[in-house]
Length: 346
Image 1 (cartoon, rainbow, N blue to C red):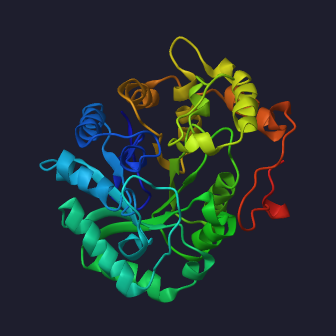
Image 2 (cartoon, rainbow, N blue to C red; image 1 turned 120 degrees about the vertical axis):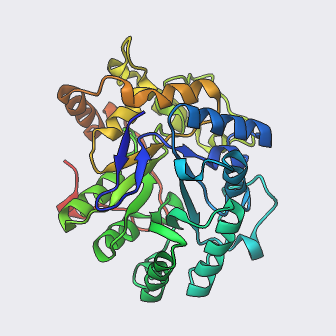
């Protein structure tokens, strides 16, 4: 395992982290507590130190799992979690993580949610507190950011940032917040097949001269870049991938076949997908979706695999710019997601 440190901080994280989304929400299959903790223990043994949770994942379950898995290793792990969804008043039964519920980013709610997370985590500090899917209203809410600074001053939070997702259309929320606020971290979706709007976020940070670094989720495009899907692949009804149109599967397989040149005897396609992300020094860590031991070992070993060459990176850019030669309907986003002309990628 290799490690990176967020700019101007002492927050050091493993280049591959463990996102508890897969083991606490029921959307990647159901895990018993014992199975979940065993997978987390193996991740730790493989050098993974970053564990990323959210208070709404399983209505607090993901945070409770961290406390149960690592009762004596607090100083050896980095805990990241997210707040913002009011699952206390609007939550559903544990096991679902996809349906959006009302949010509350008032100073009182943020303080209350942080205290509740600390209690579930059985710790006195959260290493990275992330605002979960903020809207534009929160970007310009000075009271919210003052509250985060207060929590930091009190020692309850070491660093803060935001985690963005596609449910709301997140291009302008992300770019504006990066420009307007000083955040340690932004978590977002980014991979070889889904580079918009992630690339715009990274460029916004560079253009604004900000030290903000990035925590990448959906690193393998919902498993597509692991290179194991076929036209016959099916997903259980409870698996979130079962809600995707069949064209997503068939077109994705065609794209992946054009990326097979990245595979060799020393590197799987799944490892190459992580190496592509880690080639960007603005990326602090990656959060591949982990749901079994074999996959965990593969991803944990990715930082030690041969990095992609300049030619590899250029070929990926060329394929992506032409959408891999595939004609398909543009991705449907909620909210405004068009790239401004000045930041459009050629």
